[in-house]
Image 1 (cartoon, rainbow, N blue to C red):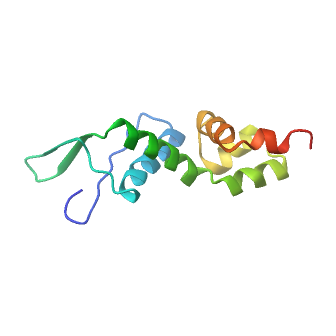
Image 2 (cartoon, one colour; image 1 turned 30 degrees about the vertical axis):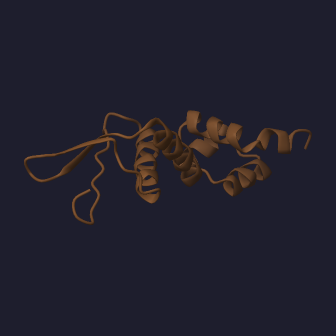
Length: 114
């Protein structure tokens, strides 16, 4: 963060889905106002964050998934009967993120037998 601005640099060698996840993860840190354990200032005056504690990382992981695939969206996906490929394409998420969110929300139990 520089003043009131935050700069997030994404790795262009990662897939667009991974970049979306990374961006939401960093946004989650800002939303939750996490303070890094380590940081330094570059010669240009940019603050470089090096590490957050484990609890903050886990919270940012969880919130980034919620931002990318809210539970209401997952319910609608199930109601519409979208395939995994349609979900990944429509929402721009990875298979791993989609599987994680379905698991975390208990969606399979809710829709079992329907």
